[in-house]
Each structure stands twice: as structure tokens, then as C-alpha cells.
Length: 327
Image 1 (tube, one colour):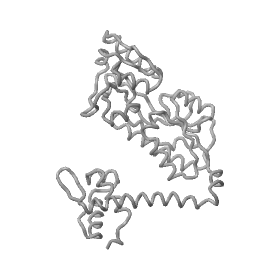
Image 2 (tube, one colour):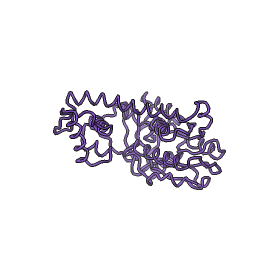
Image 3 (cartoon, one colour):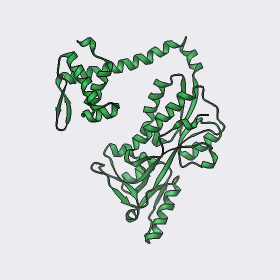
Image 4 (cartoon, helix red, strand yellow):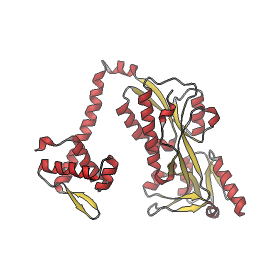
């Protein structure tokens, strides 16, 4: 009977249709494939219709399955919105509720905001509705200064001065890539550092260690380094590369969107690898959060989102244990 259908089963159907695979859906849902198959069988029995067709390349919905998928999306979205709306009634008045919300400033680099900023904000809104989050976008060195001046409570920053922050949490090492214009389709290969010397390069001025690494390779292999441009912003680098004026050596996260959209090519630089390390850091003389447990959990989940967003170009340093930040 249709009244025995559960929201969980509808969520399972959505994931299977969107991934096109029982195996991938089970992995992303963190359940076993047999258990997932059993729930879908129960769902099909409840509605009295076959919902999925299995073939050698995966799974596709039947017409009935596509109809229920569309309805399920609407139902789940409505439930999420209803949950948000109901939270408003937990406060006597919205203005007074806003006054009682704890204001927390979170520092994020531009690439992190582009990669997972929206996902992080949605997560916090659902899990910590009592927090009024002030997101401060800045480069890592600027963020260090903000944290030392208590203008930011906590932040994700690259290659920080460890001596200035007593309890930094290392999250990941992110690869630098050779970024060139053109279609990004096809497999992504590595490139030894010495092979990029035949090209004119643009570097970001904030990444001094990249220049030092390339200069060391230059001396070792007696190659000439060609750097006609050095700029500050990632947007300027994209303009130079898109106009075929030079190739760029950049962290993958800064161009990931263009790669996924098929607008750019990247190759991971190896021999040696060039990486930058991401840390989760808290203002050394900052205050305790009103809900330390809730914020610690949110920061740990955010760390995982960043790791996942970089794929093979980001190597986890630890489990993203943001609990180390708790006072």
C-alpha cells in the first residue's frame, strides 16, 4: 500500500536515479547494496509497480520510476523547507530570535568559497540555526592577520605561520597543477616539473614557494625559467591563460570549476610535487563558542567537504578532526 512508503525509501530512490548505479548509491548512502536493494523492492511492492531497470551499465528508472523520482524530489524539498519554517516558531519573535543568535566569523579563501561555500552554509543553517555566520573571504596571509586581531573567530587557511597559532589542525595537502586553456575532457595526466620549462608561465605573487621550487628545478636541470607575468588575483591568471599569453602554475582548487565545466586543462605537477597545506585555525586569544560541540562538528564536516571537493588533487593529512580546536 502507498501509505507504507517511507521518506527514507524515497531518498534511496532519488540517490539511485541520480547516480545511475546501485553500487555508487549504496556507497554514498553508507549502507550495504543488499540492504538498499531490499528497500527498493519494498518500495516497488508498496506502489505495485516496477520502478527501476537494471542493465550492464547501471540502473535507469522506468516511466513510473521517473514519475515517482520527480515527486520524491518535490516531497523531500518540501520537508526540508518545512523543517526550516518550523524552526522559526521556536522563538517568540523573529527579531528577538536574531538578537539571541550567536555571531561567529568564519574565514574562507576564495577557492574554498567557490568549491564548497554554499554547501557549508546550508549545512550550518540546518544543523546550527542559532548561529549567525559572518563569512569573511580573504587570502591566507590576510586571514592570519584577521585571526590574530580577533576579527575572525576561526578560519581555513593555507601554509600559515605555525609559530603564531598554538593549535592548528592540518587538513590536507593540495596539489599545484599546470593550467592551460582548452577543453578539459579526457583523462588527467601528471607532468614532471622540468617539462613545463618550455612554456611561458604566470605565477601568483602570494605563492613564493612555487617560484623557489621551480628555481631549484631550473638549477638542477640547467633549464631557463620563463615567467613574464606575476599577478595577485586568480581572475587575472585566468585572463592571461584564456588569451594564450602564458600557462599557469596554480593550486587545483582555484581552477576546479573551469576544469569541471570542460573549459580548461590541468596536469598535476610531479617530480617534485608542489603542494600547499590547508589548516583549520582558531584565533589564539579568541572566545569559546556558546555551542562548542555543535560548531566543532560543523567544522569537521566542512573539512571533509573540502577534501572531497579536490578529489585526487587533495591528500588528507588527518581525518579532519576539528575537535582538536575545542577549548
